Length: 590
Image 1 (spheres, one colour):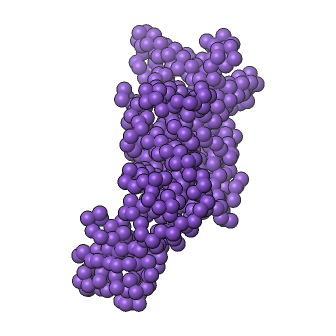
Image 2 (cartoon, rainbow, N blue to C red):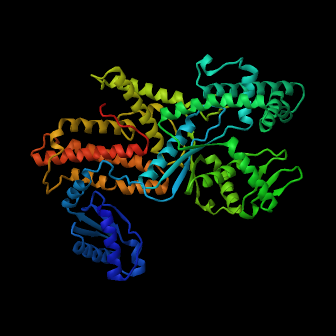
Image 3 (cartoon, rainbow, N blue to C red):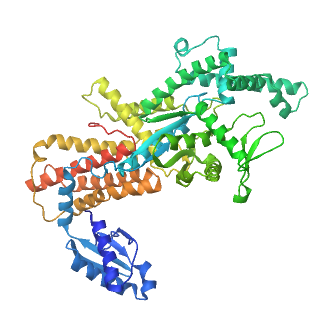
């Protein structure tokens, strides 16, 4: 049991016994470096209720803890702060307890209802881009973090495979593609579809300009452009299951799915279940029509169906157009219901950018109005956009940063920097290429995940690959350094040691290790992988300070050698486990 848990129980017990005061979890923090101590209790939150001097409360609780917690060696009081000095024996004992557990910090799956996490959810008219990378990395990492708390997780995505945007790619390929295929072009299927989405927009703009030259207003030209009217007609034919349109739709979607699968594999993410908008929108339409009959929704003169949310401080929301076609909200209603029918889940997290905050506010409210109790267990993990030095990305104009291209660029950058540093002597070409990819993707993932999801990221590939500072490669290099020590000390790892007094740097490392389980819990509660990323960085900083301050294999005694090797091994395990929660690999050598 770690010291924080021990202290929490005893502090709660002490306030009850001494003051008859029931308190929640006490506020514990690491003692400031300019004071003696390891853990500090802040007593200010309780002095108002007790009507006592904070220093007096701290002294009284400090004496109680010293008498009732054997691992407390001493204490001191600074104002309303109680600084507790923990005996070195606690930390050596703790390291012994966790040493053999390779999965230290990771809780085995509990027998309880699962949580569903939705992420990625692409459109089948274009390849995945930089924004999708942040989405996928967040969704995958949050899933792994919840699993590390013992919560069963089902990872899913909704593939937006229908709608006017899909028809735009299909129509452009039909008109201008001349039978081009992924095989004939050498392009991944998703990139081929994206090429024709851009082509549609180019032709659309050309036709708008021509109509404006004929005297139409811009608004009229946008509505009357022949290519848009053709795309709208194709959508109507799709909804009517026209055989020719359906054949083209199946063919191009197959190309795109194959391309997506390769990108997901390269990025290291996966899904337990895929849902398709082309299937779930029908259930959504049915539910909306039933809601209309029950008076939950209302119909306008043009036949469109709406939800009136004005009483809840929101607006009216369109659910079905006048021609009976559905909107995104209709599909999302159907998808949510289908998922709770398909799986025994107790909650659902949507990982979607913050531009959809209002959409999910409306979705959850509509599902609640429809009478679904689980609507209160839906959460939107809203994240900020990823921006680039040259501005925002636009799919229609073909100015997005392609996910595949970015991963390749990261690998190439890792190759260039590694070759400049000259760190890879004795590696085969195959080993080098694998290492470049591990470093490049590790840099990309860490750079994105270390930032609070709510914040916008200005992404700079070059800055992310740095072997110094708060970066993935810096942490990977420390892990590889530890593995090098362990290879030289194989015989010491199975031996026992007897250490009574710790070097302050050793103690700091173990104190960091002790935090790992609570850090995982905090990351899950906050739905923020950055909590894990920055913890691993703090652990690595503490270890490197230890590494530079005390000898390991050249320590004065055999006991110290064994202890420091085992401490190093446990740090390596924890780096690996922490990075696993971020979807990042660690190399054995660098």
